[in-house]
Image (cartoon, rainbow over all chains, first blue to last red; front, side, top):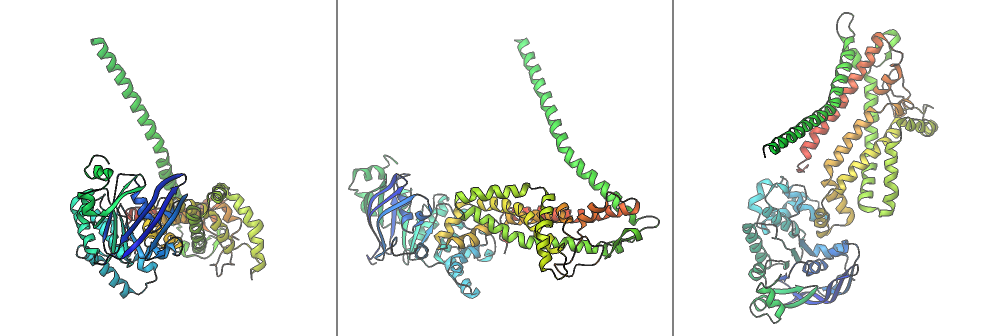
Length: 252
Length: 306
């Protein structure tokens, strides 16, 4: 596996009005790996994740300073947010399929980006659902509402919907926090499978999950990255005392 | 100790009486509207169906398919009125729904708060204007304008009715569509943006489809408003005594205005025939309501439409 850097973040500050939510973040995120962000609620890990596809642009009063580059190109200066988001897909905390059929959900992105031919769409939908390991479960109900399947299945439909736009990076914002343990395992297996083709960045408050699936882990606290390194090192030999306290469950 | 218990019992019974009393009051209040509906239906149908039964009955078929209304010569045909009512409603909906929906989207999704604070009270005011004022406006402004372009040289026309009805259905369509658009969860918008959609794409591909049940409800209510409108329409329709409309410049005579214009002096069979017109109108309104109930039930679960 290559150690090519996908995202480089330099001195990133983020403010909600007067409140500084992220403080001088510096990080390199490697291609083809799963990077996990852990930390207690409100530590800025989700906020940081959303700077990577500029979802924070949608919130009023957000100010961002510093530099984030994707493959060496500044995503805030030299990128259109819409272009960026079709290269950096996102899966949300709550499964959020549109109130449409499963097919239309997965075809939403390709249609937005101009794919009109039925045969091409059919192909993309099937491929994406297969990749998301849910094809066999839903192939007979593609025309049924995506809201009619279970929460875990909905989340995998959402992952398929993200895969359908053929992104390079997939951001996952606590993708299993609303799911039962079995669905969680399925999503985790899926993430491990997907990292062969995609760079995956996952926010989780479940430390076991970070330990199980990630290659690199960053520990966030009050808007700062306290420690960032190989997952094994972070969990077994944390350098920082605060990381150790959090890992061992002394707070958070 | 004993005394205390009996006191409590007494107090308990008093509360119970009060509860029962209030329940009765609530029930009576609720009955007022239900009984009114029943009374109106019975009354209108009894009067309106009379001419078609018994000795000297008027043929229901020639009533419902007739193209001429001439009470003095015992000719009562309302097909051209039905057509006029339907065309006017169709026209108002065809214009009103797109305008109303775009306005709703603008208010809910696009316009800055300052502009919304001007537009919204404007729309609310529009809803509160009495229909006679709409009629006067139509007669004073729209009819003369149409007069200038009409090949018939006559401003009172189907087109005039459609114009005024379009304005009249707007508040209903806008406010209902707006609230259903606002009720669309933020997560749908996030999902759409997250897939690389622009704002306009997000609005039309994700938000509006998610709000469709509310928008459909708004449309159906708009139909009900348009088909039932009387006063404004009466002043600008032309109210011809016969003949199907052949263009948007033709005069029309909607069902509602037929009743309103002649009821004050009609008697005997003529009056019954006006009630019969009411029966037809009522049937349309019930159809609209029935559709509304079906729609809200079917779309309530937000199942896929396509």
